[in-house]
Length: 232
Image: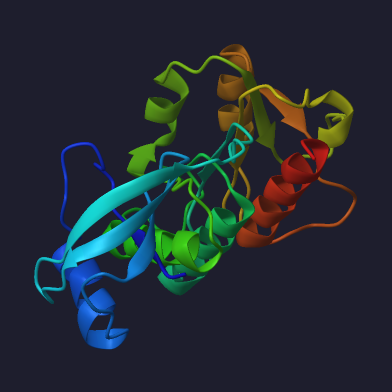
C-alpha cells in the first residue's frame, strides 16, 4: 500500500499538490482505493481516497495504525561539506536510520558557509516514505557554531573530534540508550581546538569514533548506526 506524507492530519483532508499529483497522475490511484498516510511525527494512518483530484486529492481517515515508537532521540549537528550533493545523500540515509533532527553548523574550518535546506527537506520526505518510516527528521537551517552551542538541549551532548592530545572515550562506552543525545560532527578540517573547548564549557563531552579518520558524512552515518544499534 503506497505511503503519502500529510503533516497536519487533524485539520488537513487533502494531500499537498505534489503528493496529489504523485497519487493520481503517477500511480493512477482512483476514488475508493486505500492508501497509507504518514504525518512525520511517528504515526501511520489507513485512509481512503474520497476525491481523486490530481491537484488536491481528498482523503478520508479510516484507522490509526498501531506503531511502535520510531524515535531513538538522536539529534545530529553536522558541518556541511563543500559538495551539497553529499549532504543530500546524508539526509536521505539519516532519515532511513530514523534520526530525530539534522542541524547544519558553520564552524571555523567549514568549506561551506551557506546551505539551502528546501531540497534536503524534500529528499528527507521521499526517504521517509520509501523506507516506510513514520518519523520525519526536522531539517534545520545552517547556524553559526556559537549559535548552536547556545541552544537548550536536555540530554547527552557529544562532540566528535580528532585532536590527538586528548584521550576520548568511544561513543558506545558513554552513550546511555533511551536518552536524547546531540552529537556534533565537524568539517573535513575538523573542529578547531577553540571550538572544542567552547563546546566542553557548555557540557559537550568529546568522543572518539575509532582509530580511523572518517569523512564528515561517513562519521554521521557511523554515529546514527551506533545509536540505532544501541537502542535495538
